[in-house]
Image (tube, rainbow, N blue to C red):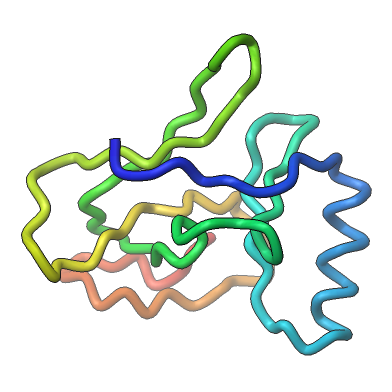
Length: 115
């Protein structure tokens, strides 16, 4: 285990509203992570360092939803030993959508998009 992705647990309708508000406020990036069909973790204003972990098409970590006392949580685990000063990354696994988000990870076999 590397770190838990923490923030406020919210519903999709709230996440949609917040995402629009964050754009208007000029925040630019929102840190919304889907736990399941009903719940999203919003780490934009109340998260920890996990929200700053970048995407990679060749990551050294992965995210997993686990249950702790029947509450779902997101945990980042390492796939391999990670060296001091090595960037921690995971694949965001965004759903496939028509509007593509360019990937800038620089991995040898980069997919070219996050979705």
